[in-house]
Length: 185
Image 1 (cartoon, rainbow, N blue to C red):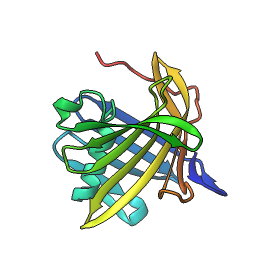
Image 2: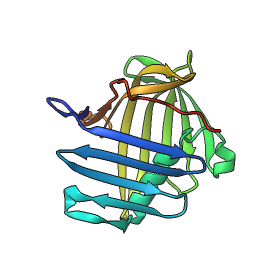
Image 3: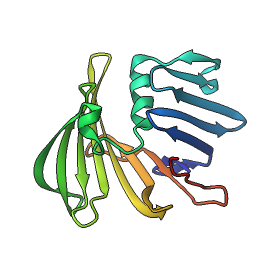
Image 4: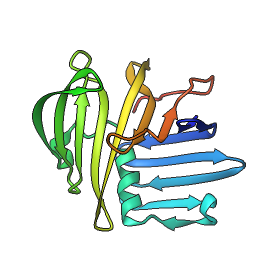
C-alpha cells in the first residue's frame, strides 16, 4: 500500500537486490509497470506513468537514489569500505523515544542522520540531506512495524516527508503468500 494521510493505493511491488549494488525494482499500477534498475555502474528507468515506455539512462540524481536503494545493508554496515564516515552525536528525542543519533557523511557528499533505538539498534528515523540541481532536499523517513523474516529484522512501515511536516509518502508492506526473502549464496 502506497500513500499517506487520507490517500492510499495498492500496487504490486517487486524488488531484487544483489550484492554488490545491483537492483531491479518494479511497481505495477493499473496495468503499467515502472522499472528502475542498476548494475552497480549505470542505472536505467522505464517510466510509463510519465509517457516513457523505453528504457532510459537515469539522471544523475535518480541514479544516486537507485544506488542508495541497492545499498542492501544500509549506510552503517561496512561504512569504511563504502567510503562513508560516521560520527556519534549522542542521544536525541525522536517523537518521545530516546534514540542514538549518528551523522553519516556519504561518499557522494550527501548527509544522513540515522536514529537508532538504543535497546534493539534498529533504525527508527533517517534524515537525508542531499543536493539536487544545486538545491538542498531534506527528507525524514520513519521506519517501524519491524518483523523478523529469515532471521533479519525488516521494517514493514516506512513513512517519509519534510522535517516537522506531514508524512505524505508511505509504504506499508503487507505480508502475503508470495513474500520471500532469499539469503545470499
